[in-house]
Length: 132
Image (tube, rainbow, N blue to C red; front, side):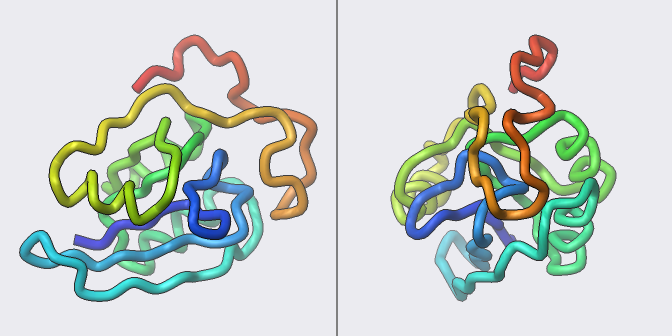
């Protein structure tokens, strides 16, 4: 299984599309085989889900993600888990132990400015239909 986590340093980024990088983790037999970091190519609708599909990602973990992005990931058969925060090592440990639970999207106005399109707020802010 290949997992991608939107990252900002050693922490899960609030918004998957506007984070500086993604940590890609290969897991086999419930053990980490390889970990690498790829830079965010820039936030354009559908570009990051397409990149993750090309990288063979099975699961995308992020603090927040809009419904359009979730739909793009679903089209590629990539599971999304949002509402995640904290140190990526802790998140990976919870994933391996089966204790990682998603929740509400954590995206907040201005999150990740400078990584892709400049925005004051997220497209999905206050979206009541966006439940996980």
